[in-house]
Length: 159
Image (cartoon, rainbow, N blue to C red; front, side, top):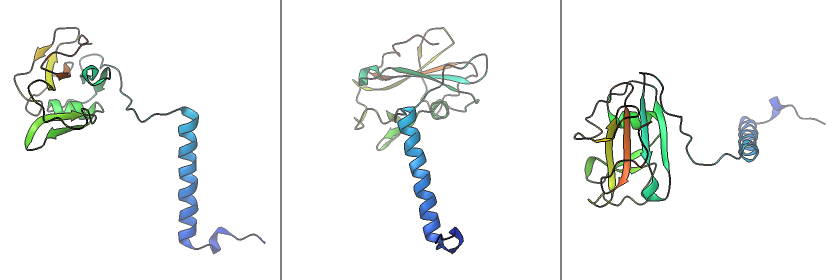
């Protein structure tokens, strides 16, 4: 004899729905080969948005380029809207310690290894920022750069 779903307890229906959802999600990961790495969009085009370059090469990665399609009020807002995450150095708010959880653990950002912040015009030259990313208001169409190391510009040219 079949049991209708209406006669099952509500918790059982929710549990079955949750299991079905998880199974579908797990199958999609296997089928598409999705990894945990973030997906970044290409550089912004035209005079809208802010392109963000984050150079992870000193940390064993590569330089990633992404687009913040909005008109961000700060460099940190551009970093976040472009799909990157960040944390501050403990007890030093405003000083970026990690981007996308790198370095891991946060190294306290000594002079020899920290996230430096840069600006450029598209296809221009990197200029070291005299303001912190939380205070700088990037112009639409500009490029913002981040590089981990001893204050050297990102290893790729501004797109």
